[in-house]
Each structure stands twice: as structure tokens, then as C-alpha cells.
Length: 365
Picture 1 (cartoon, rainbow, N blue to C red):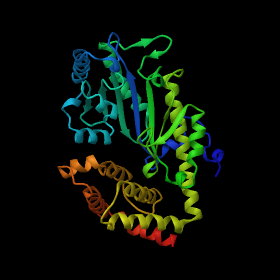
Picture 2: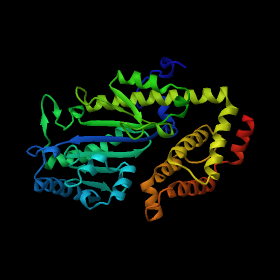
Picture 3: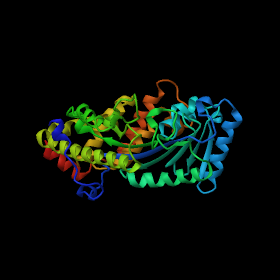
Picture 4: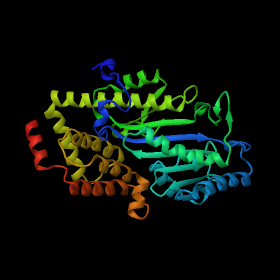
């Protein structure tokens, strides 16, 4: 399949027939992020007065905690292990931890919202939700943004828009991203061409954990690259349209792979399931590779089970989250044995191979 064939145009947004079906087999999660700074305060990289940094933390906390159920975590009171767990759960960034002398984070009770304070910018607001719904995510975070702006004026320029520490965030300060599970397109070698095509539209495709990360487990993050010169609505529509194209292309490629090599796909799925349920040691890299195949089996109906539960397992099996599950840090080498035992137990309890699934697998043979 060529690049042009892979990405067919989508007729309309939100009313297309594609939205009549759940997109959870491809679209894993949606994230909206807003970068903001306040008038009359130095940017964090020039914020040498600790009392001013503390004043920013207090102002934001007072404004949000009065209307939302947030928990404040000051980074200078968080352990390195706790910070790593928060980072693996996508609640904080590495830069927030590096700036821990003056930084903090507000996290909502359901962990869907995090507001990082004194990171690269005065605040980085983020809303995270499962599935694919950019409009709802933006509306939810926009309410938080309006609440803060009503009490503390943002640094804004009529020509450039919201002023940010990094020029790539100038303008709207909006980053809209969707995490996508694309095993078929990755297997067919289509991702490089897709990324190149989207880059010409001001969009970027990266590994699931952002810039510099690899595409572990066939997980990719599609987001806007530019924030200047486009309105919030234009950015959301551009990202949404691109996601819809990718969803359709991935489903088409899955069907093609199954039609052309059903036995081969079934073999890959069952081999991966067998390894995950019987191995004694399991590195994170191995886990991500085999789990991608198991998830593909579920998406194709060769295995039963919940993709959402499997995605949750991926988050749980990162080292710092294993520490949280175990109750204490493990010794070197202990993570691989813990991961193997835990994953095997979870997958066996999920009962991914049902009678119906056995029938489909028999058909493959």
C-alpha cells in the first residue's frame, strides 16, 4: 500500500460514519495541553526570587482548589521514585522535576487534569482522557484555563498571542495529541511516509511518550507541531482530521494483513500470548513488543478481552509503577521477574482465549 492509498481523505469531522463506531481499537487516549505565563512575573528560567515562585504556586492553588478537587504536590517534597511514577503516569514532565526547587503540580482526584506550576512556563495545564474526543477534552481544560485567567492575567501579545518560554508554543499555546495503536501500519512499513505527509501539514507523529521516544508497542502520538498562526479550532480540526485518516488506514491495513496471511498473524498472536503467560523474566521492551501482538489479536477478534485493561497493564508495568504495586523498590533484575509473574497472572485471569476465539483461530489454521 502506498502513502497516498494509506491516507484517504475524510469527508467531514465528527459527523463522519466512522464516528458511529468506537475508536478504542486504534485511538488509545486524548490529551490537550495549554502553556501559559503570567503578566508581571519573570519566566521560570529567570525566576530567581523563591518568594515570587511560591506566590505563583499559591495563587494558582487558591484559585483551583476552591472549585475543583485537586491535590497539591510540591516537587521539593516528592521523592525521586514518586516523581518517576508520576512521570510514567503522564502527570508531570522531566522539566518539572528538574525545576523542583520552585515547582509544583496540582492533580485532580481522577488524575484526568494536571496543572504543572513553574515548569518551563508558569503553568502547563493538561487534560487526559481515554479514547478519542478532542472537543470534549479541550472544552474541559478551557474551563480550567478561563478560571485561572479570571484571577491572574496571562502574558499575551496582540501580534504573537500567548507568550511562552519556547517559541514553538507561541500563539495559542495549545498542543492537541492523540495516542494511536498502529501495529498493522508499523508492520507494513507505512509510518515513515505517513509522518512525512503530516509534517507538511504542520502535524507530527512521534513515539507514544513524545519527542525522542521510540514507538514502543506500536504506540504513536499524533499532535500539532505549530501553535502560531492558527486558531484553537483550526488546530483541533487539523489533528482530528488526521486522526480519522489514520484510524481508517490502520483498520484497512489490519483487514489486508488478515486476508493475506491469517495463519501468520494468528501464529504471531498466539506465540506472543504464550510467551507472556509462561515466561519467567520479561524486560519492558519484550513486554511492549509481545503485548502489541496480543492487543492486535484482540482487535482482530482472534482473542477476547478488554483493550482498555491491556493499556492499563502497560502503564502499570513501568518500573516506578511496579515499585508502587510492590510497595517498595526492587533490586536490579527484580523488575523483569516481577513483570513476568504479574503479567502472566493478569492475562490468565482475563481469559483471552475463549471458545469463540478458539474457533476463529482454528479457521486461521
